[in-house]
Image (cartoon, rainbow over all chains, first blue to last red; front, side, top):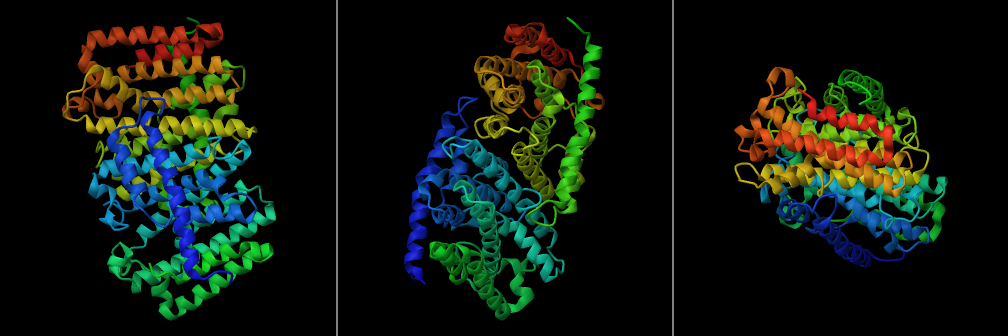
Length: 305
Length: 305
């Protein structure tokens, strides 16, 4: 291990800080965007509330670290990273809606439909989702249109009916039903894993990685998504609400099956360790250059909030 | 005038028919899409309910007619046309939600949240919006990635916070407030005009039109959007519900200001006639080749449902 967890957490925080002005600038620019005279102030306020409210910016970090793995400057990936964060944020805004998970608190703050209203939250989510693709289509994201188009393809497939949106649909349908471990793995792979894997793959696309390297990164990303989800479920069981900034043990209260419930805490911890090892194995071909991404997997498994 | 309105209506219907199997095929393919094993059946059913429920497919028609204007085969534009229809359909599904316009009937059928449920309608809308960009990123849409990326740019900007979503936000905020004519024009230009103009502009992009030609088409599209909205408002005042397939005079009942209310029916009809003339003027540089698009503007102004 090259670094301890402490410096890694610092690098993650620094990466999040570098993204913040990019995200803020993207929303600011909508104030005088064509084709109209600018977006309505209340809509922009809701988008800012959701997007600039903190968060670890873990998906952007993964994208930028993957770019670094292939020898490019992570800063060149800031726009694509911002697009992924816009997409992730839209999914949180819509998932929190009364008709969905009905959450009032997110990242220690009121959710958008509580701070504003339901219609505004739906529209802010729609606008953030649309903004993600707007960003990816800009020359600033990458000078090569083939790269930009491929970024759109990877993100749209991961986010759509066969990925994240489909996973949320399965999740809602699972309330009060007894799912098996395989079903929950599929559900969580779609709901959470697909976007995490896409963030990694988009980094490989941006950096011009070859097909074999891209496949290895995708494989790492999928396993990382599973590790992320198990760690999240463990936090849901063991976490403390004020530290986490959201309600805990709520999945159980809703009758939602999590992997940890199905496996038990002990086996879940064992699967988590094994999954981290698989993440490292997927990175083996890259040698020591991939140490940062390997550390990201260990960090995910060990995080306490 | 080369053709009467009757053959035009038939061509519009034929264009809609040619699009139907493309739309159906796009949703079918999600059943075995990666990265997961396929989208959930209930989500796909809701997407089909919304997308395959009829409709004039006017935006796809405009896109394909613009492609024809520049000498390309309209069939080459079917994928891009399908993307625009997916995006338009998502906006209808979300606008109909209880938190928004709260409509139970659309195109003579139950709206998605009534036929399914609210969460499913939100997710089906999200999935259709995402699918629009997925489609535009495919080689099948256009072999040149620069064209695909530009299509994404045009659609995303028209659909986002500075366009369609922003217009819906302004529309919701206008209930019970007294807006001036300029405000309503801006609102409707964003809510409806932006996507109609984008459909035309995407046709120009697909066909490789030059900057001046593209600007002329965009100008035509914006004016057409205004004509469309005034005609729609007139139908809302004068229309008969069963024929229209949706509730009428509802805008007035909600205290929403329409251009027709602000102008009065007589002046609205005059502005509509003038706007159609401006559509024709924007097309003048193209000569007789643009007769189909000019006829589309006249058709919009004269439609009775």
